[in-house]
Length: 183
Image 1 (cartoon, one colour):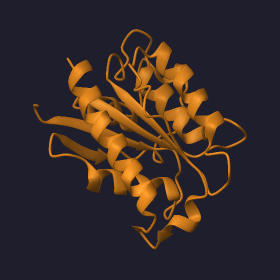
Image 2 (cartoon, rainbow, N blue to C red):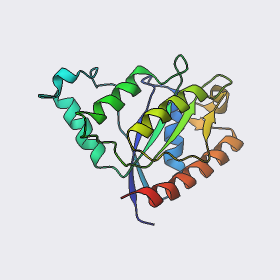
Image 3 (tube, one colour):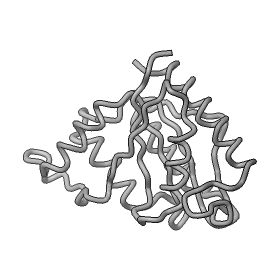
Image 4 (cartoon, one colour):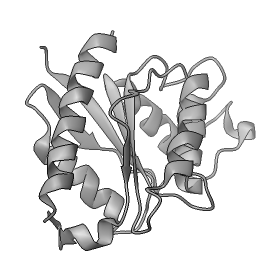
């Protein structure tokens, strides 16, 4: 398989977020065919269609950066049974102006992460609704809902062997998915 560049988008802005820890774990477990890079979203001002004619430079930089990637891995927490506002904003910024989406046709996968018991199921599926509209083929299996994650890390080190094995299976399947669906 060819090497593919993967943008890693983390929905949580918190410095020590569990989503960031899981994203970094996935990056370490990724096969050499995936070159994964975290793309930060916290610097993006709220999307405003009035700015489409003269977008803030940070919008243009973000969109141009996304275009360099062959696929996207989303790691998201769940806020009020949905995705965090920062993640939704990044999706909106990258998808505009209408007809010029930087997301289009990029294969992707979603991992939802929570210290709670439900695995952020609502956020995972809410995000997938947006991905359909963005024409991003989202990996269906294995699904990744990571619950009770707070007890599975010692600092940045994942200590749960079962979760580590699952994440290995997930990222290996994602590599195949990307290769199958990348342009």
